[in-house]
Length: 275
Image 1 (cartoon, one colour):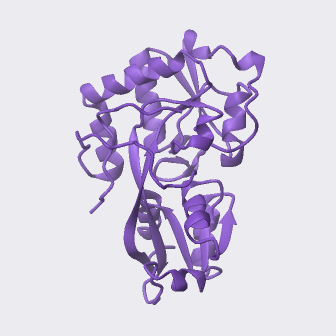
Image 2 (cartoon, rainbow, N blue to C red):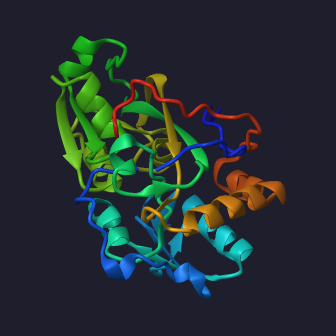
């Protein structure tokens, strides 16, 4: 069963990633959302949240949420794929108006972008071969194995902070990390739970399993906009609306087969590292 609860009461949370500096292009100061188009950036490589279909179109939970927000705002969505390392720089340069890409709210990112209310909560998990004796509850065991993670994510930064002596192998995309895990180039992997479950359900992941307990680091996904952009309040209003009319629940159940929670998820500071 998925222990991850979808965020629905949309309680207070603000702004964050650690990519370029804080300079925002003058041309990006005003969002296109004041017109009839809202430009959205996503990664397109983080199933089930966002992915690229065989025909080149984008799909996933984030894409459906973005489209629902656009429908509520009565604007047309233009969704663009952007590699993860460049996703915040792309926002700041004005390539798109908002990021909907399973992005965690962190203090580091809050120095560069403003966040809407959170729309999903996340936990981390370890994966390894089913017959592996790998035990993530034992720090010595973690340090004795090579561990894969996607770089510049909550997963990799949590691992770097909590297990600085671990043999970390960092990847540009989650897909490449899974590829090396499935090819036995690394011993184990740490990942967001839902992408991990997605991979375990595939042919490539059939010989692998979750190891140990879920890791709850009070991690929440939110939509990023440029600092000071009035779009933040508009998106927050639409998030409330799509929750109230049942749209959010339908999207959540489509991808995760669990009912959306009506309970508030705490977003107060914890010991978690930045993603």
